[in-house]
Image (cartoon, rainbow, N blue to C red; front, side, top):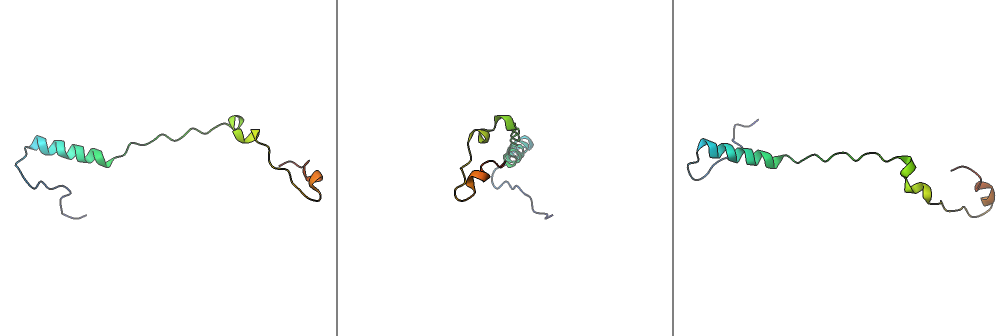
Amino acid sequence: MSDRPHLRIVRGNPTDEEVAALVAVVAGLNTAPEEPAPEPRSAWSSRRNLVREPLAHGPGAWRASGFPR
């Protein structure tokens, strides 16, 4: 940790209340609001189940069409 101040007032003669307000504003800028994690979607509502997978081509394709994916 360094002994240098993180905030330095260059001009003027602010009161203690003004310095406290400035520190509060600068400290508030540094924190970003946390976004809530997205809720997991149910497999029942997945659109992936509505889309058919492409059919296999070539020798043995008719046999492979009966295999579970």
